Amino acid sequence: MGNAINQKPAYLRALMKMHLGAMGTPVEELSSKPVIGIVNSWNELVQGHYPQRELAERVKKGIYAAGGIAFEFNTIGICDGIAQGHEGMKYSLPSRELIYYSVEAMVKGHGIFDGLVFIGSCDKIVPAFLKSAFNLNIPSIFIGSGPAYTMYKPELRKLSRNEFVKGEISEDELIKRNIAYYSGPGVCPFLGTANTMNIMVEALGLSLPYSSTALANTAERLSLAEKTGSRIVELVEKDMKPSKIVTSDNFYNALVVLLAIGGSLNAVMHLIEIAHTANCDISLSLLNDLYDKIPLLVKIDPKDNQRNMIDFHKEGGLPQVMYELKDVLKLNAVAVDGLNIAERLETLTHIKPDKKEVIRSFNDPYSKNSGVLVLYGNIAPEGSLLKTASTGDVTYFEGPAVVFEREEDCRIALENGEIQEGQVIVIRNEGPVGGPGMREMHRISEMIKQFKNVALITDGRFSGASVGLIIGYVSPEAAEGGPISKVRNGDIIAIDLKSRTINCHTNPEIKGDASKHYEVKIPTWLDIYRKFASSSLKGGGMRI
Image (cartoon, rainbow, N blue to C red; front, side, top):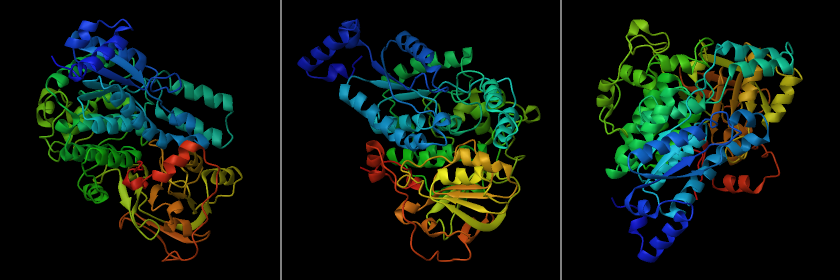
């Protein structure tokens, strides 16, 4: 079997083998076996990545059993949970680009890999790996840690945080309760960005069935890792590159799934960016067209206080969802197991409708409309995103704006009791350029849960765990001269879900001078990112 090393000129080939052989690698294997790179984001900081050390060993076992040879290397990874609410969050989205370029450097810099296994689990890491797979375009397959197991219902996490914000429980009690909920390593067990993006990988066809939902640290997860290792060798043998597997049909399917599960808004931005790298197309207009065609079939945490990813997996996970969506999916789309979607669904066991509590049928959905909506208007002429799956029965909201130039100013106002019922909070200068880095406003969205009637608008973004009438990704962003920069305190803002609009009524043209960008001292990497960052609804990637 030929490999990348053997394709090099004799002298270069010999030196490559010398360096690899110096670590104990049998030189004869380097000549006869496919060389597989294992791209692992394992570290001891990120809960979702911690199990990936063992997963990598299981992947290697599968690779060796199938006749390959493996070399593992690591990437960085930021925990969004730890980075939330402070300056560290500015590094989260830009880290996607750092990871993307670092994988390119490792793979092309060494020039030895015939195939790649990507082991990543969390918010920006999985999108970065997807970009890398399409950029490098050598046989690739994905697996992550899987959702962490928890014995407790989601309401424990939510209630404890609300009580702490209100001053009803101590910091020690908050920590105690949340450790009880996040009871071990693995991806946070709700449908946030991390689990959403792992589901997107499976929906795109780049991982084996159930890879997105099989629980962390289980026999099922370890078995999937070993099968993933075996499959990458087969993909190399058949020269099955990402470009041969994933087409616009696969991206269409992923978008349909995203809407049907009411997944994280961050996934829209990531899918747009990944599709750009793959030379495929995802448009916001398609998203809105599908809103009326794709019902909401899944309801788990953060939309539900009783059920989480564990319950989702028990009811069949993504394969069950795709089975319910089979009449609206592109069934000829191919996956890494060599089957198209129709063939995949035929081989899997599906749960009867009368036995399900989490995943509903297409004809009996939680809502006839899907979970994500694009809003336009004089505040957001290029669009903004709302997770309608988390807004309850609200279809219209109108109130006076209270404007903040950065997230911290809003947090202080909330802590001081300066926000009132009926207001529309506007946080600007938090986009890819303005942040820089486009922070999530998750901590703010948690704090405003104490109100019954408050909306939030920002050119920043939200965690997949955020709920309520919160609109993000407003484009153009304030730092690029977008109309949101001209909104004034007291301006009446109307949010209309039926007409899909977000407008400033008292200032229809949003006249006046644009707000001065909030000046911060920018570290070197963030300054580089802001100079080349695209808008959030164009993917937020670097256009160098």
